[in-house]
Amino acid sequence: MRTAEGDFIATIPGRLKKERLETDIVAAGDRVTISIQDRDTNLIEAVTERKSVLSRVRPSAGARNLSSDREQVLVANPDQLVFVFSVKNPTPNLRKLDRFLVVAELNTLPAVICVNKVDLGGVEHAQQQFQLYADIGYEVIYTSVKANIGLDALRDCLRGKLSVLTGSSGVGKSSLLNALQPGLGLQVREVSGTTGKGLHTTRHTELFPLDVGGYVADTPGIRGLALFDVEPTELDGYFREIAPLVASCQFNDCTHTHEPKCAVVAGVKNGRIHPDRYQSYLRLREEHEKLDEALY
Ligand SMILES: Nc1nc2c(ncn2[C@@H]2O[C@H](COP(=O)(O)OP(=O)(O)OP(=O)(O)O)[C@@H](O)[C@H]2O)c(=O)[nH]1
Ligand SMILES: [Mg+2]
Ligand SMILES: [Zn+2]
Image (tube, rainbow, N blue to C red):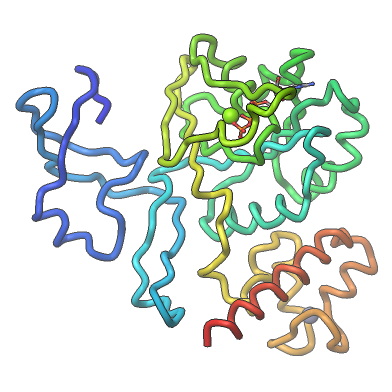
């Protein structure tokens, strides 16, 4: 626990365990009141109510039964999610981005897209790939650690907030954080050699304080996040440019695949929905239907 008086180790009393059965009792990002005895043996007295949460539902063994599942909190009180991609090395996987954005919408958290390594391909090339996300209202920041581009914009975006930073291995997350916060000294992967694999050892969520105010959370959990708690039929609601059209479909159980007078298919035709985003929607939906079949 970090306090104005320094860091302390504190444990969770049984009373809190009984009160908060349906969720993780304390998670990274929680604000807590502790009573201090000494550095290592202290008690958490209270956990402040969370104003936001990045969570996933831990699927219970056997059936997929939402009501009996306990919430698994990856980060408490996040202000935004920052998804980092690189123009090249590795090539951006935009279907993965679309999946991340569903996670953001599902948790009603603002999402920021950071496109790093623009020195490798040029900002114009990067914009061709990512402009569509700015068009539907997501903040997109283009950066290069190597060429010192966009780092002020990224710093401004993180200032005073608790941001969850995530992205594939090698996109430059540690490099970005080191550049923003000299002295952080995060390990940066070397491209050559065989040292790359297995270097990433973060298992639990870590919060890094920033001098400009705010924290960045590095949470390994979000990377493999399967959207367990999204029903296939409600997926359209988490694509922010698709959601407003759904009410105009002729059938209220429209899957937006083959039905006549589908407002979503019409939206793809008239350019309101980017075809790639529509393809992502179809793919995620298909994945979820398979998941459903497998579980019931
Ligand atoms: N050309 C170029 N290379 C970069 C840039 N940022 C980072 N790199 C390089 O990309 C490689 C990976 O960077 P990291 O910061 O370790 O990537 P990471 O996202 O933290 O990767 P993991 O910790 O494995 O998840 C390193 O060799 C960096 O030097 C950039 O803006 N331009
Ligand atoms: Mg790293
Ligand atoms: Zn439809």
